[in-house]
Amino acid sequence: MPGHGSGARLKNEPALAGHAAEAVRNAIAAKMAMLPDYLCKSLTWDQGAEMAQHAQLKIDTGLSIYFCDPRSPWQRGTDENTNGLLRH
Image (cartoon, rainbow, N blue to C red; front, top):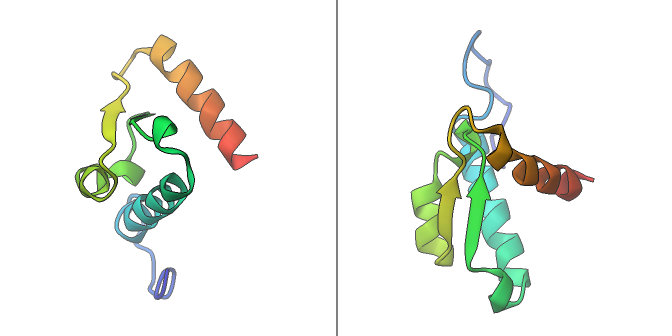
């Protein structure tokens, strides 16, 4: 994103706050627009600052957005596997 990384980063600042949450929102919205409608009904995400703009993402895309519960590793397994596949 324009201006990202141009300022000094404060010590102990959240790594994915601000620009990163906006970048994640924009990236998800762009990728969802490329998928068939039957695949764009919901999104499940782990707890994280990168989804700080989830409300706007829901408005932009019409997705139902769900978050895994803290201390519930059985919910995160599929989420983390999918995230790893997307990164790959």
